[in-house]
Length: 553
Image (cartoon, rainbow, N blue to C red; front, side, top):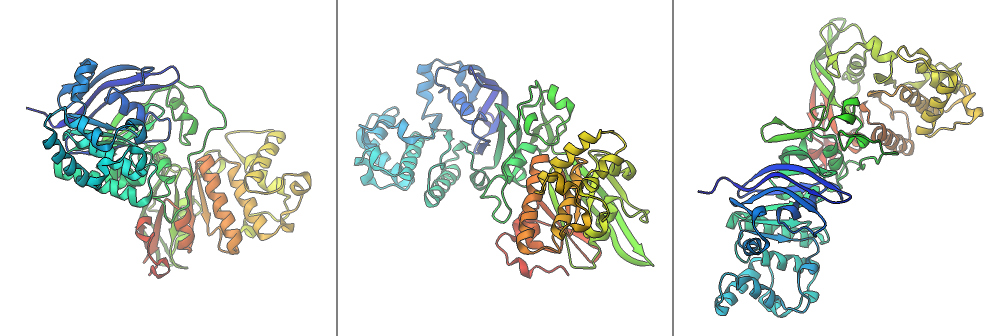
């Protein structure tokens, strides 16, 4: 009796001279549509070719592959060839490369069907059935591959793949070069074949929108390793690995309202024997450089390979309440912020946004009930404000937040001079000040460094406040209404600057704003505060909605 798994991988790995697919263990249930996602070069196609034993001859295969209970990897090529099309089929990315240009579609299908039935008349009937199944005309059988469009070629390759009703089809980028209509046709066809004939699909793709539409399970790969496994909806809605989140934030199809940002490429490669994502990870710690992460179960059907257990919760607040003269300002508020994400707090004026932000930022000591944890430890604001890698706060009014008699160098360098855990020389402070000014788009010449804060424009003062905060390399940056006094052009530039800096340095941001439109463009998550409590807004609910009609009441 067959078990519940259509595919089983045991320590499957491939070694090339310049690339290694690290040992993979995985079991895929029958009647499943599985997608394998990742950037180019992550090992997706290598994995598919290893499973189908169709490596190019340069790769050295290790491990064991079971398909439908048969250990395919232990068979010789003649026996494996007999199983292709019957037990498993492969549809490669470049359809034209797999078809003989001198043969008609009829001849291609006939060659496959003869493996099972030599009767030409029976095969003709089956050919007609297959062409209709994939949405092609019977008359197309007389045509040659070069006479077909890309979408038609892909459909015909699928017809060849399902001709002998295999148990599983392995597909490499099935929609990568197709227009929207052709792509949707292929998606509908795969879903129909899966539901009608219980054919399982393993689909390699870089298209996360496709993965979301079509698959029930997803594997995420990076640099030859699996970094995350789970239900597709869970992975798309709540990624646990920093790399997975980066892929999702880079997807145009999944971010119709929000600006997209790619995963930063490291300026230099850091040699390490640990996590392969170390160079690009913004929540890395020393152990990540030296320790190879293991794929670990973190929930029901959820696995992640991260030495920190996944994306770290940098801030967690429980039961925050505030009263003033017996008036309840905010009551029983819970919220959290993960490492490397931007969270916005929206709501009408006077509802308590700034009060909540000041409590979270450690500038309101009157609240006695708060439970605030920073990086899983009770928040020690005295330390977090005056040391590197802590919390920095950008106040709404930069005029009152900055000492007007200071010059630019003094104002930006002040936090470093007051820093308690690291002493820096004047030259080191100057270097950091110049880098921070450059990051926020301000001049670094001597004239500007010596200019008084009182001589600057409002926009320049706002950027000075941001530069001050950046010098402390914060893990959490809180900004209170950073664009409320700015014109639309300056607002757009400031928001993009915020996101660019956050994307590069990886700090988390908590932005207080009354502008939901701006929040939608920049945020990973949004909290709405009303009636003295908070509610979480899901960005996806407002992508195609008239957001001007969303009530803050």
